[in-house]
Length: 496
Ligand SMILES: Cc1cc2nc3c(=O)[nH]c(=O)nc-3n(C[C@H](O)[C@H](O)[C@H](O)COP(=O)(O)OP(=O)(O)OC[C@H]3O[C@@H](n4cnc5c(N)ncnc54)[C@H](O)[C@@H]3O)c2cc1C
Image (cartoon, rainbow, N blue to C red; front, side, top):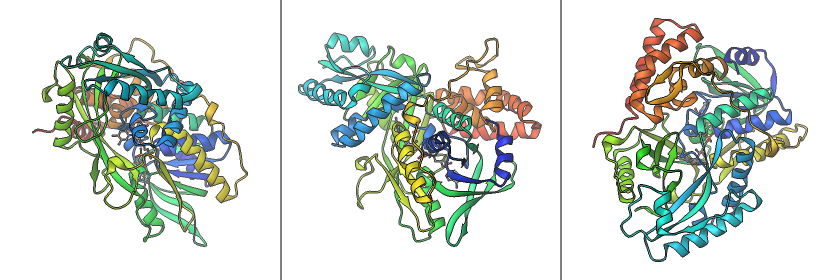
């Protein structure tokens, strides 16, 4: 995937079948689906691929045990099917993970044991393995640092884990392999119309500053928490479709959860679930559900969210973490389909919504990373129907996603605390459309999430390598380094 070719292709004046706005899970999923069916596809992303919510998730491909408790059987069944398909189609990115619910109360074992049998049954033939009750000794073996006082046993079940930003880049590469033209750092500013119908967009290339006009038979709004901004661009009186809900995560050293299993706390103080998950030799602890008044491009974890997560980690972990142990803090914002006024965001459904505006803009929002493929299938079917494109079957249930090419040995490590090499920076620039230090350290690699201070320390070297690859000068290196180091400071745990 080469950004220069993408720009040339977009400037050639082709009228695409589909133009997708937004390069997160939803938009990239639609791009893969439509391109694999044989439609012509363009996608414009304002920042980087997965730069919004899609790189800030809990990184679970899961049915959602919590949604089962809420009685949302349809969503859980769909998500479990999608989980099975994704494990099959992207085995290099998605892996089976054991989750253990520790039982301290008298009724915990039968209650969660039974619920998880239903979870197993809903997965059907795509199950990752049966759940089972663990004795106290087995629970202590699976969760080596779990608080032993009062522990009666546990329930083990299977779900899957992935790297969200890497899956996003893989989807972009897969769509590109099937002929889609994708451009990151390109912001849609306006719609163009013919007889009142939207027939394209005007966009700004944020790398070169140039303007861009792209035409299409159908324009799809997949901008996550920003869908309402584009809907009001189409029709100023459009009623809002999404509520914004923030979730924060802490990243801790792996020593706080050694062993291969994840810890699942089924009910926190505010009635949510909480996970402590081994991920890339660290532990992710999350998440929260905090209603926010408006979307933010770079959401910050609030001090109370960090305190809440640390407090719960301390309750369940025998060797308890303190603020000084936190390597990184990140937050993301869920685009939740609005409920009745006054509904708490944690009670809102995680299902998706599709709407068609008066100018023909197709909007899709909500859902989960796990269900991106099913959402894409539905939206491309609908796009073909409303646009009068010839119907074509959806092949993505059996479509393998682009495999990663291993990095050749011998390259310099980026930092002694980070598992990445300089060769990965060059590859990100040459093959994965990385344009900035942030693209590389936050999403092509996950340095920023794994250790914000170490990521900050590598920024000058990464900027210098990128400058060689992209033909940039010293001033660019200085500006990129400064911008990234300011960003990384926001991933340190807030004081207080
Ligand atoms: C804290 C948290 C944890 C989560 N954990 C999980 C999990 O473990 N498993 C799971 O399945 N799901 C999880 N989710 C849900 C999942 O992450 C989201 O459903 C999904 O990432 C949403 O993707 P999206 O493409 O709709 O939005 P986004 O990823 O936000 O993508 C929208 C894109 O549109 C772009 N855009 C906006 N305006 C414009 C414009 N004018 N021009 C061009 N581009 C534009 C933005 O830059 C953005 O990149 C979690 C969500 C959160 C917040």
